[in-house]
Length: 222
Image 1 (tube, one colour):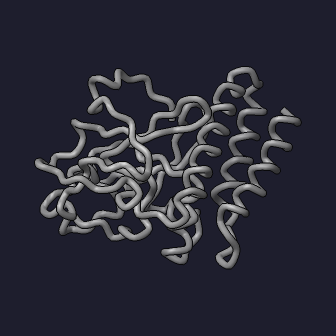
Image 2 (spheres, one colour; image 1 turned 180 degrees about the horizontal axis):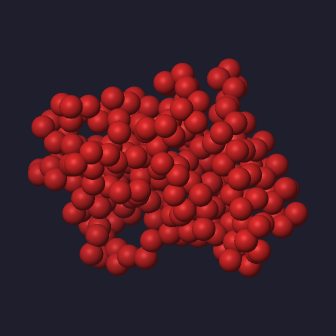
């Protein structure tokens, strides 16, 4: 998702890599779940997020759409996001005690918060969103430890690949007839989210296979 922002207003002015230390430690969010409420449709999921959820919860993508996820258009592309519900607009995975029920398999945006990603020169770095987390006196934690994701090198390569694929599609969509846009959106949903990934095979290998097929089918045929 592309956002225009003044980095001097939202960050501490620094950019971080996975081996840098950054003030994000929040004492396990004790007594606070502010970042899990009122987020609208902004917690957009990528294919790895959905893979973690479907394998971790032993369900299908369609099952999650029943009450946990929504579909919305992001820069011209239909993508899933965490659903907010109830009077306090809480994440559908938040329990009555204000704790995340999927913490070990939580989406990437949740994992990096209050960090954000800035994409430049076909890559990205992390930045600290200084106004987002309510916790005061946060402690320094290594970015890699904070993100808590296995195969971090593969994961970052995947995130980068997915981002620039979506960016290319967003730029392409306005030039296409409405019928073609619908076909492409259905293709992306089915190829990357609806069709289950094999548990016994490396996710990233399967994703790359689907990405190459998508680039051939979409960019050549449309």
